[in-house]
Amino acid sequence: MENVFNSYETLFITDVTNGEEATQATVAKFTGLIASNGEVISVNEWGKRRLAYPINDMPEGYYTVVTHKCAPDFLAELDRLFNIDESIMRSMTVKLDHEVVVAVEEPVVEAVEETVAVEETVADAE
Image (cartoon, rainbow, N blue to C red; front, side, top):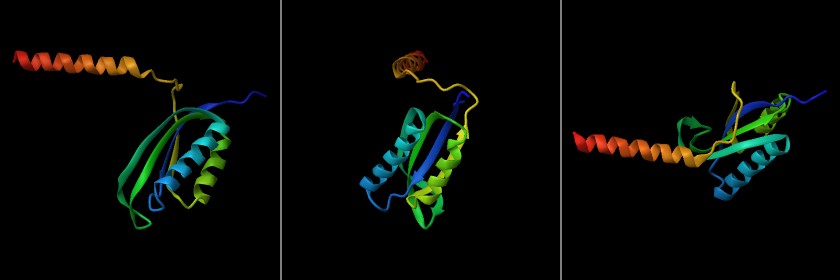
């Protein structure tokens, strides 16, 4: 039977009170776990941010978003491991409806630069 890999996006918030090294170790642990059980498309570390409301009396957390492909049964195990680890404050996984592909950064940057140049030209003309 062939494994079906779906596209997912997982966000988890890591406790920052233990220091930057512990935070990076936790992020590396979970991204490695996801990579060993599927295919990681991208890892976006949003960094340390203020929470909308305190979680366990902590006002800040380290946000990480991982876009990946994996088998659906792995998500239950990943959620279980997130709940066991005390350094994970919150986590959420969402199934993506579209096929995830690796984005190429350069054309996007060039398109944004062109848009800004056009907007500046229009502003100068007025």
